[in-house]
Amino acid sequence: MNLTLPTRPAGVLFDMDGVLTANNLFHRQAWQEVALEVLGLTLSEHDLDTKVDGGRNPEIIERLTGSYPDDALALHFHDAKEGRYRQLAAGALTEVAGLSAYLDALEGRGIPFALVTSADAVNVAFGMEALGFGHRFGPRVLGEDVTRGKPHPEPFLLGAARLGLEAAHCVAHEDAVNGVLSAAGAGCTVVALTTTAPAEALIRAGAALTVPDFKTFGLWLE
Image (cartoon, rainbow, N blue to C red; front, side, top):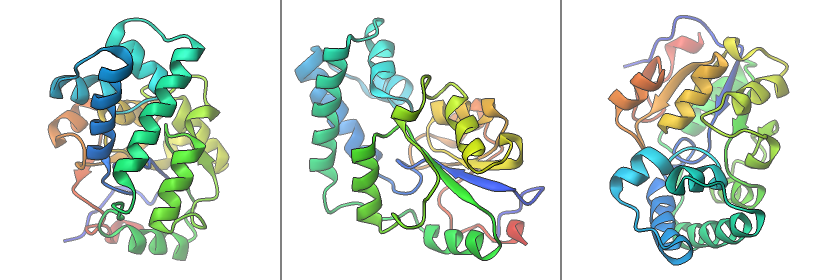
């Protein structure tokens, strides 16, 4: 079965975590451990579902505590949480099914693509090395490149701009509600992956379609 979209995109914008690789379990475990250790917070599954997925760490801390962390706390938490994530994920990352073939198809048709992620440079390098994709994603927007992270539209507006395109002419792939809100708010057509959140929540956030992986992609690129 092939997925059909109404128009051929001018460009495609990819989130990383949960889109290129289904690694959310590692992030969630790291959040639970480090939030308890550093913030004294016991995170429920509801907290993880509604407040943690999608966005940069200081903004997530603000969602959890009601206060934006000062620079020292933000840096300490970030280093602890992302370091723990990399420990948990080391040797365990694989690409979402069908991704390499999809990237081949985009390249073969001259459709440019970019990375739009809340991750920092260390985690992006870690993920790209594990997946073998470092050479495939030239244009990138990382968490430190924006002043307002997801769910604000800024990351996807910047991602489209780095391709020399309008966001409205791009397809975006996201997996988290806040990511979908960001991409849809920028004007992208969002095809969301159900690796992190249920399809119903992603559609409510603004996704045009949901898919489990990239194996169903085909006819819409013709």
